[in-house]
Image (cartoon, rainbow, N blue to C red; front, side, top):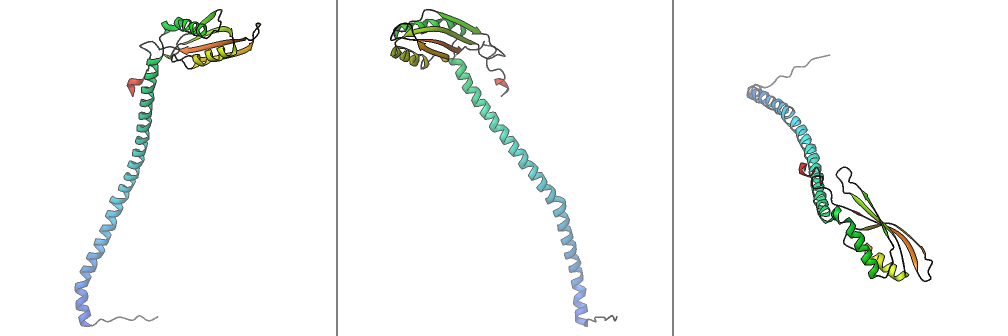
Length: 191
């Protein structure tokens, strides 16, 4: 193995004296830039990713919160439209009057009231047997279902009546009542 020495011309040696400090300075600048990149930018990117994840999570929570608030507002409107429990017996009178208007015979009614559970609305049910002509019963049921009093038909059993051209049926109508003033919409103030 032979080692060859590279000999520079005197002009090249003189020029290299000026270039060496510039090369060292460039190496120091490159090393400093790389160090700053590793020390500042990489952690900043991690913090940015964390901030974006937190932002997305908070945005989802805000959307859920707004949806819950809107649902509570709609529920408050429904609570306001529900009848008071003291109006329960008047529903029976209204049903009897509607039946009489439609030539449907109702000999008697039974009332059942379930108390409110966990601050929810109380439920009332009215059961009765009725008979009449098919058209009269059909019209009576239609008016009962489309009334604005939050009545709904829970059970309906139809059959033939002992009288000709008449239909007999058993029906159970239910409704819900406004909860007590202190119990309605618990937790709404937390939102």
